[in-house]
Amino acid sequence: MTYARMNAEERKAEYTRVQQEYRALKEKNLNLNMARGKPSKEQIDQANGLFELMRDPADYVTDGIDVRTYGELAGIPAARRLFAEVLGCRPEQVFVGGNSSLQLMYDTISKAYTHGLLHSPRPWCKEERVKWLCPVPGYDRHFKVTETFGFELLSIPMTEEGPDMDAVEAAVQDPAVKGIWCVPKFSNPEGIIFSDAVIRRMAALKPAAPDFLIMWDNAYCIHEFEGPFTPFPDMLSLCEENGNADMVFEFFSTSKITMPGAGIACFACSEGNMAYMKKLIDIQTIGFDKVNQQRQVLFLQNKAHMLEMMRERAKIMAPKFRCVTETLEREIAPLEIADWKYPKGGYFISLDAMPGTAKRTLELCREAGVTMTGAGATFPYGKDPKDSNIRIAPSLPPVEELREAIAVLCVCLKLSALEALGV
Ligand SMILES: Cc1ncc(COP(=O)(O)O)c(C=O)c1O
Image 1: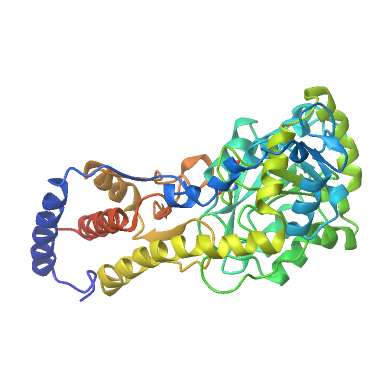
Image 2 (image 1 turned 60 degrees about the horizontal axis):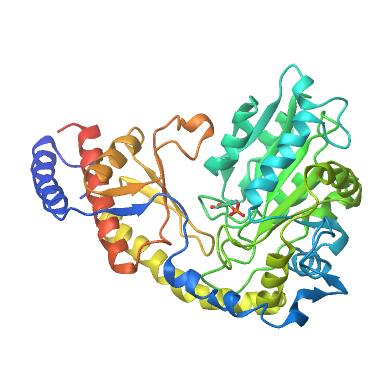
């Protein structure tokens, strides 16, 4: 029977029973962490081949360039070609940087703030106010980047097909609205793939701000763990076709392919933006770590090989996601106290608990030794207006630990729902 249909007495009895379960779980003194989308040891072990490379001096030279010394600000040609192949754009549009796409994202926004973008009438720091569109639920680190520059964050609801484009089209009429965050494939945290219609409308936007910026974070573009690889349109060409070539910066990294923090990242943009950015970055650094660029290229080889690697990765990821959804299906679905998505790729499962119970649920989890992403994190300013969304990151713990962690989450969801309904 669902909790809502139980009478007061039944609910009380259920509460007592679930409290006992909770106490038993607490006695296990668990210490499990599902706070962030960290790859497991098993996953990163799949990239240990990286350490076998670069032993032969011939490997230090690529396209006639010695990777051990300065030069090639935009990255070695082989890395630019590899990322262009994955993203479906031209190598000249790719800038390969250091170990983190988030850093490149921060840097792009930071440059817009201090110097302005190619079409900015003035640097954004000189604007009276800058507003930014945040599809929700979304990636907390994105939101924090734009928050730290003092932008006003405006929530845009996500639909099953991506951001609500009616809301986006209306919002960009305001010249103070300077940009939007997008994770177009396997969005963080819902695992939504933007539909063709959403992508086309996004590329065809006619914003009032001449320097409106789409931050197209394609972090999970080859990260299927169920079903075949789904090809994805190249946003750069679509924007170009719509006369918006300079409106988008795309981001990607090998963090969730080889080793996070020790991989390589890139941005891709129009040739105009590339020339503008290179001029600014040239003052900042003489060049990024080309030795690691070469190492990653030798390891990853080409798109077909990367997809093959990701199919191996899927064998580790899929059982973890299945463990979570099957447990929720069994324990929570019959009670009708939460909804969740069934992603086919990416790193997260997004769960909507009964409104007003997310914080309490996660507090109970923490007390029982299970750390999850904080409630509200998936919303601007860390405030979920419904106090409902919970992000589950199943990648790090082994399946046995994950099973225990999700058991704790289920019990905590039940307790908080019963408390909210009145016991
Ligand atoms: C959507 C998204 N973008 C970027 C990142 C971070 O990528 P990187 O390690 O390249 O900075 C993450 C990590 O969880 C992510 O979920």
